[in-house]
Image 1 (cartoon, rainbow, N blue to C red):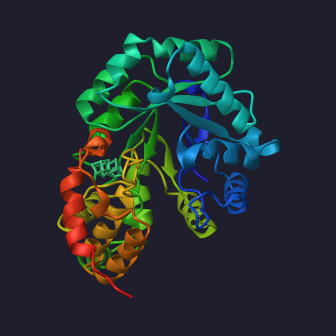
Image 2 (cartoon, rainbow, N blue to C red):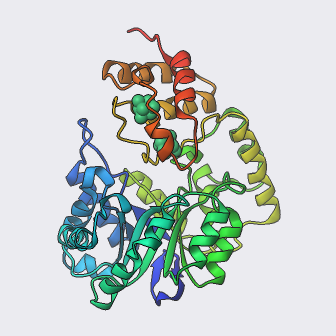
Image 3 (cartoon, protein in one colour):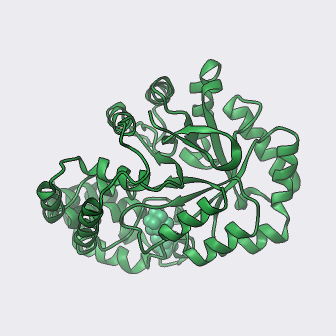
Length: 380
Ligand code: SF4
Ligand code: SF4
């Protein structure tokens, strides 16, 4: 497993980090605990040393499952990062209580990294005004946390302001070869590196979308002189940045985990691993993707819960899959299951709540109508 320095903290971490937001689920949507334990333990035992969780992942079960899986010797081998969202920081006592609960769930005395979850331009002024980072600093002085960071969705300008306004230990941002001109862009990664802030990449596969492509995308991969699976190309792109400490992947199956461990253990999985010709090929792939993926949803689920129970990312994922593979039939069929469950796009009451929470600024209401028109009507 390749390792990288983690900014100024002195940590060395595995280049592949495990995101604990897509753990295996049961049919009722809850986590399949036995499978999740197996997955996490396999990861630790095969060199993955960075685990990312959050207060809210898996309906607040993710931290507990991670803690149960690694309790004992495995905990000593890994770094645990988790996050508290502003929404539950009602006052100073609540911020501390939330951390205490998190430590309890994770069965640990300390966190290696504690993040503020999902800082964007909208909430940064409140975080500063309420001196929330002072609370985090107290936790660090008490040894309850070792490093302070934030996760971020938004553009470069707001990122620049947030990153340069505080002496952060780490930041977690979205980047992949489709985001060269979106989110923090490559300029944001360089800025983090210049400031010695450990850089953790999320969404390297854009919510899994880069794992497969349209006929046009697959043809470009097939024509490339170097043959690699699409997943490996996407991981290599982000691993190519010397500023990157770890790349998070939200793995669900043992098969995905094994494949990723193999990729991140290759000796040439290094900064600058892609040639100019490789990068030009990925730029071509980006163009091909952008000509077919019409809804840039990353499945981050920040828009949920919807008061009408519309499963927004699931609806968009079906549509994008249909567009990418140029085949609507399988998506129409799976959309029918959402309809049966009363969670399809037609249930939208146009309240607009979701649109205020979407880090990708997607006009959700408009797209829900388009998707319903395209995918409804399957009968079996
Ligand atoms: S606008 Fe529609 S989809 Fe969005 S939260 Fe409101 S009801 Fe749900
Ligand atoms: S619609 Fe926006 S907030 Fe909702 S899952 Fe997609 S990207 Fe995330």
